[in-house]
Image: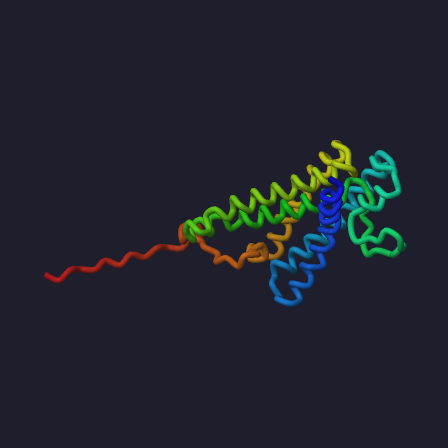
Amino acid sequence: MEYITQPVREIFSLMPDSILFGSLLLYFLTKNLSYGVFAIFLFETVLSHKLISWIFSQSVGPSRPAYTKEEDLIKCRAGFKTAQIKVNRIFSHDQYPSYGLFAVTSIATYLKMATSEFADTMDAMGTEWQTRNLLVNIFIGLVVGICIVARAYTCDSVSDIIVALVLAIIVGSVFFAVNKALFGQEAMNFLGLPNMVTKESQGTPIYVCAVEKSQ
């Protein structure tokens, strides 16, 4: 069982930082606005987690992890790490609540809302695209569910998981709205879909030309 759970837990542990660096790389290679704004969102997630952790430490005191063994301290730590060599990491994610679950849930919330933003466009593009929004929601739910199971198996208690989930959904929703307001709807368009709008919603008049039939 450990041969299955350990790689899965490590994937989710590295996922937030690897997605951040991958998004930055894709933005510099493609100059795609969506990847750039997504990278900004990941920085916002890191800073939000640090702020939330500071608030918890100031209000209820420093938190103690549910795990105490040295090997658990290493494998439950989120972000890039080495087991035998002490290195200075770019981001330290040891604070409460669980950064691994917090980041994955926040990213899932952001991507789910970005996909739903263009649900009407996908519905208008035919049957081939109509089910994609549903599939995205299913796979996002599976990823978050597997992450919860992986973290609960060794690292986090039920209360830690609930706190991380609730705060992550709030942070993901808030920063999605903020980034959309700052950069526009196109910054959420990861699939490069056309922006379909109706004349009625834009208040644009519709002109109808009458053609007279010749007698």
